[in-house]
Image (cartoon, rainbow, N blue to C red; front, side):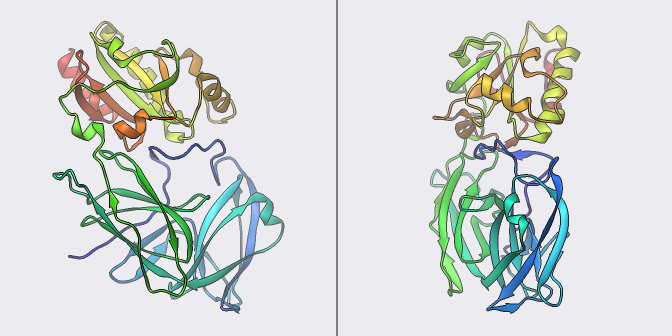
Length: 361
């Protein structure tokens, strides 16, 4: 069967769950215009027509891939472009034939002088993806691709329980994070001068949100809370339905409409307060309520106060992590438990609202 893996820069609509803490989100968002310039070389020769970008789409059967709005090098392999810049960005540069490449993290301080990408032959990296528990198809799983110690090049999706991707030599991380699965991450060191590299097999475990539908959810793990005791137990909230919105501070969608829409939902359905409890569950990017409050205070897009929300906010433990175990997959994400603590529904706020309107009308 044809295997196609699409790699795109994670962006915009929803943030991938389980990502490591990012107190300074990379690139873009509110940064000043900076001139990004330099040269692309292949074996000490210029790479005319080479491309630089942060997100790519691969058709691996055809060995062809392209990027949206790449920076194109001139006939001498030189490039330059002004763009919003904040902190750091990670790029993949490839030659015109898309057979040689180099990944590089560029920090703001590096822009003081031209940077040089030195391309090497790309390597076909193959990963087998399995689930020993059985009965859980491993196709369609999101896989993030990062430089080791740096940011994402993009993210892809498995087909037929496998991932095959062209990468330049170097250290990378592959992050398997998707709704219905507990996250897994593997480090790989792609060797030079080899056409193919077999990465370690990845055996995934279904998340609790996939395995526990209709069952009582196990106790959550939290480090702190606003509006509840910091050691509040999930079991203590039984007696009413419980709507949990998973979110993270570094997710623009969560700040821009996830939490604000939850506030509107709360106000719209005030008559449900005796039958429905709402909790906003923040991931472990924040260590405490104070840490969360401090980060949000630095964001230009904030139009609400985390201390004034009409529902409690709890913060995930560093380990074991509720977000990792439950596996929401993306942020924001909504989960509904019944009055006995059984997993009843999951998805978007709008989807859960439709169900509640039928049950609580």
